[in-house]
Image (tube, rainbow, N blue to C red; front, side):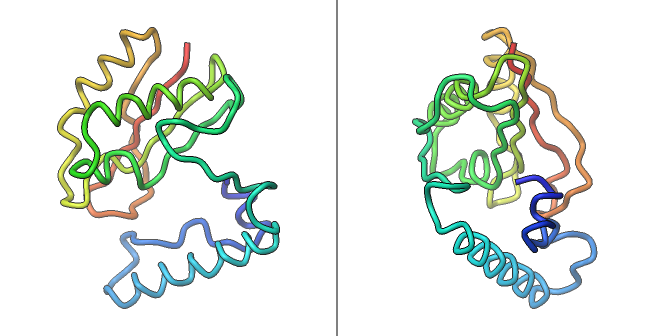
Length: 157
């Protein structure tokens, strides 16, 4: 969901941990508000089947080349201790499958729950480039997690 659509639905797309959050209590309140806003939007949409579609990586229920922009937020890399390098590669291959040629994939954050960068990111980016796509790190002003200053952008060939 992009920021304008979120605003239209009454969702605070910027709720979360950033430089303006001064306490864990405020962080918790922001997380709870985000959850409440999501639930309200989900219920207004009558659940799965309209705007929300259930899916699990590394196999998504979408057609090849279906989306021009694919967003991955707070899953890949964040749980790097729970999911191995092969899972991450398979998941990115699947995101590439559903992305249109010339489209983009954006993944954030690039750090784990331990706040350490994903150690296999350079090798993963090289593998993406071997497939003929481009992969680059992009600076972001979004700060949901301390140390999460960049996102990975993949441009599908």
